[in-house]
Image (tube, rainbow, N blue to C red; front, side):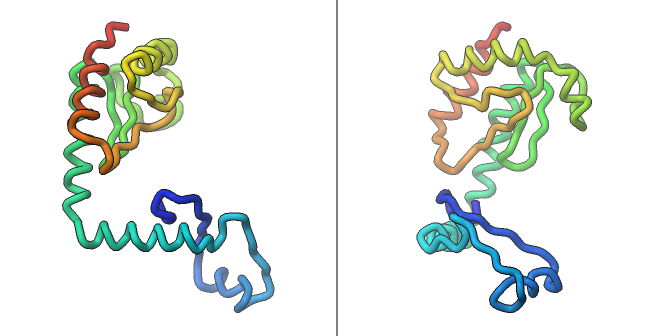
Length: 153
């Protein structure tokens, strides 16, 4: 996110710690993706777009809610925060890792293959999330919801 979709490394901390990093302090820090000027420019451009178009957040919320509804209609437990969501193969709330371990991962594996066969690529693990983006079209969402609803496993 910080690189606007480009690879970029960033970190932060309390002022007292950050003042220890060169050039202010004695600790040298370097990394392949640290301070990448192209990615930094992309990140700043992304922030500009988001600042100028706050409706993007509302649209993302609506898109994710649409997919959440498709999952829920099939009896899935869904955890969602904004445009990030996870669907679990359980009828119980999933509030922590131990809860997630009780989910039916074999069913998830079948679901994953079903979605892939339907042209929808998801993370292949029950323990990963779906990320909805501004680039996803209404057609993408309809196709995904149809694939979710057509899973019989």
